[in-house]
Length: 624
Image (cartoon, rainbow, N blue to C red):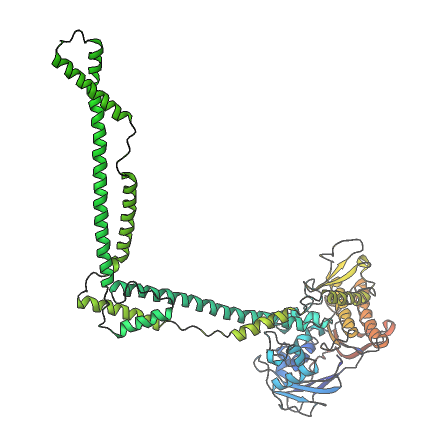
């Protein structure tokens, strides 16, 4: 996105003091150089403040001196000036001047911050198509794009330029918010236009949450309905037990039960005639008594029969000696007619008993089978009597009847006062399911596109890296930007894995430069519309300067290598890419590093903060 910073202007609180302007050239490396504590670093804070940051990083002595800050720039085809009143007590001011054109003589507040931000969103290409990839009717998601998030890619600040693990200064802008933004928009800025995928995933989450709520409500409704039905049927059984409803009345539907319970409660004096139940109980008791009598008779007969058989055995045993006497001692016995008749009679009785015992005599009746049948019949009768035992055999006393009625009435009222079922919008549920299904068809993983664009990004970074001469130990290394860790890694030729450590801050500074220059080169190649084509670089000399008079020749060579890389980058964009790019750099090194014998054609000195000069002119700034 075309962006040219033309001027930064300061209006001072001191009465009669003239404003101070700093002018910048397009397609140049615009440098402000000077010593420490001269206000160089505050330039980026001023730019950010005028681009409507919610907080300020401008040094307090500058805030106390300046009344208004202003920037004048070109974005796209528009020239815009934004002025903002100096913070008060550390709080960013809401007073903003906005104009499509040059600065006023004296700024006054003429716009609301929200309206200016909306206009800048539009200029940064943040359209409704990105905010609402499925149309405004679908609503926004939790992550709302802002032009300010894209400023992450425009500043290589002092705090990160020499670090090993931080390539984006999210802390400067607001760490938690901008870390989250970075994870959303990095693929977008390298050309992977998958905001539709991002929004689709978030929309799927929202839809899933809504579906879960509806399904949970439906599940809760089902539980409430089952509890209601069970409670209704239990109350019906109580009504039968208390004698308000016939015991044999069967009701299938819950509504039928409610209707009859309502009639019980409404007709409070009604008592059900359970005479049929009483008659059945009487009949069962008679059947039980008859069966019991039969069982007793059978059991008595069986006992007598068993006793008869035992008696025969005993008689046979007692007559057994007669045979022996008759066979062996007959001559010795007194022979008399009476004796012989008696002995023969006894022997005949024994033979008769033996014949009876030797025969298989069946029971005169089927005693065992009848006993089993009668016992089963008694068991069934007892079970049925138990089932009917809840039926009152007599009309309860009036007081008890009203107590029962009160209990039923209370239970019925609780049924009527049950928790209402939440209405389930089945049409909406079906719509959500269909919408979720359609969203899930949106490609969730554009691996091939991402892989191709990341290869292009790494190629751009590598092109810049190959121009360096001050990293001889890693001259053949391959550069790879790890987008999961958001760091640039070096992988030496022949090694399988990237290096965990590349040594000094100087090496990391070079890697940061290569990454940012390569990133912007890549974004220009893919015509990325959201990130302005400028880069603020805060003191590449930081790894080398302990103070202004102490820099080794080797370190100077490395710094010149870095300056040459930046110069060649702008030249490449302007001359070979036929595009535009602007670098704004604050430096500690003197102007001689890019003039004279080290002439860098694209370097332009904006100002030198030396001999007491600084961001605030010496005649205005009085050190407290």
